[in-house]
Structure formats: structure tokens, C-alpha cells
Image 1: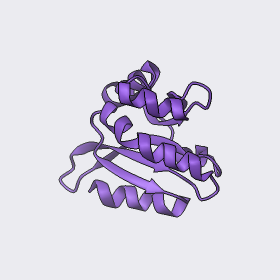
Image 2 (image 1 turned 30 degrees about the vertical axis):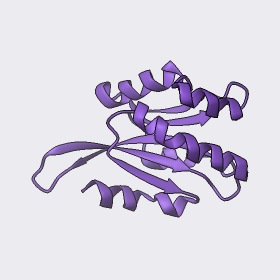
Image 3 (image 1 turned 180 degrees about the horizontal axis):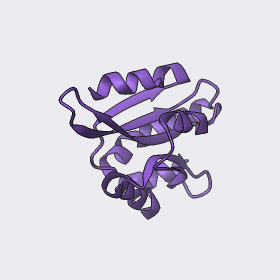
Length: 143
């Protein structure tokens, strides 16, 4: 993890797959969500899981580990009261209470840099358990 912090200062700590997957989600709408993790060996932020366009927010929540930190982005599509279709991208910093303290610190340190790499995020949630990232919170924030 120390390597991840050194690499972050040089801007070489996010894989190209992370960037391209995010752009596919943002512009082509082929992914509903992406889960990212920090690889223990390389220290790079990598893609852990990609949810297809037909998957839901509940699928994303179910894919997050109960004892490991992750980052996730979710593309929330909705219709406004004026009957306009809209989309908002949420960034979720997942740090469950069962994860190691050192891991939480590293994920917290790299979070801001990842957000800057993934341009176009509208809202951020930080969660330590599923209730802090419920679908109702997504709906309330987006509207």
C-alpha cells in the first residue's frame, strides 16, 4: 500500500481499464456500475467488478464485500417531475466496519485522486454499512 501512495503523487496509480470502463459507463451507458479496488501487490486502483446496463443498485450493494474497502460508481437514471430523463453518477466510498484500519486509511487517502480521474461525478456517498448507502438516499440526492 505504501507503493500506492508514492505512485499517487506521480499520477500513475489508476489503471487505464478504470478510466476506459468509466468512460464507457458515462458516455455509452454499457455499465450500470463499476466497483474498484486497490490491488495489494501492485498498489494500483483496478476494476473489481462491472455491472451490466440491466443490473440494479441492489446488485451493486450486494457485490460489495463485508470486510474489505472498495470504491464504486453508479449511474442512476431517473425521470424528473417535468418528465425529463436524467442521469446522475454517484461515487461511493465503501469502508465497512469489518475492514482493517490500515486499509481504510489508504482508501481514504486515494479517494480524492480517483474522483479527479473519474470526471463527471455528481454526488458522493461514504458508507460503513448498507444503511448508509440505501437506494432511498440515492433517489433523494438525485432529485
